[in-house]
Length: 455
Image (tube, one colour):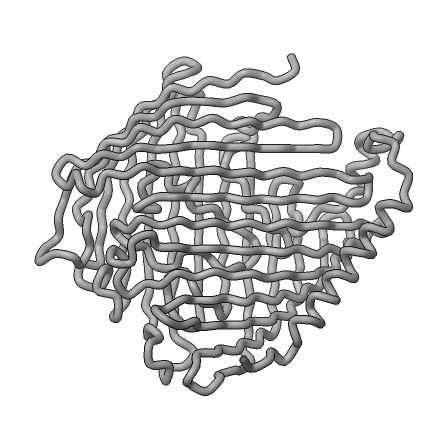
């Protein structure tokens, strides 16, 4: 296999050296078991934030009035959904159906002096009125934790696992499509109408604030997409990705952060009897402006090198510009998150590497004590980097949008209704090219409870 222009061994040594440096400094510092003997406001002024361009976390979509920690949460949701194109291009005409879903949820959100942990488990059961053969059982598991090893060193990790036959079967698409300030490969680029699939996304990050205004960090990421029944996903392929990054961040002032980052990604796609490999390496400068503590604007950009290995075809490689712009705002009654990225990526069901333009936006508004509204939209366009790859899809685009309205009754009962529209255009994938539009309307009723921890 052709070697990358920056050998993987050198990358591993670089990341290992940074992690070793962080560990040595961690062991060398006195661990008193508390954050600091200084007043809390002084500690907060000294502690740096991890800017969105180098943080693996998504922007929050809840308003600050809805944000709570140290709770055990649970609930049960019943949803009825009408969809006008259930099976995509598998028939002579679109097939509509009504589905009924039962989704129990349990979540633990706990905060201590140095550790914040969120654990979520949500299985689901969906039954179709006309096409009972597509009845499904879903699994959704998530973990998100942040641990302050010392006042200057923090460790964070996130992982989410989804087993479903339709990633759009969640009534609240705002929660299902998080917006991030960094450009990372998505486990899913093309949405198959009905296809049993298993997707997994995870990342871990270690940061070290070595001075009042200086921070370094290293992270590792992975994604995985597996179609359990290939016959349901004709034209799509299993894929996986692994990567690592290192960054330096400097706080120019209380509200201004400037830094640089290096990122490596290895993306694999698995056609029958073969393997397609894409490697990308990106060097970027980033700038984040915290307009207020709850409002930030970020920019990042730099050169990206990609290399595509697809035997027996010649290896393809080139340089291309990349960049990301994002904004996040979390107020008492309103939250907004939006991002735009231009990168070369691969996988996510597609074979090969693609010039990608990706945009996402979410809006949540608490209208009053009992009413909440939400809007979301996404746009993506993919164009193959090399049309000479015989089995590579030429590319395409996706546009989606949704709206929801929620009403609470007392402290435990919620009712929600919403609408989603999805349009996909990919010439080489019959599942989505024959009938490219999907419309979904749903109504749900849920019972929820929250119990405070340690009180």
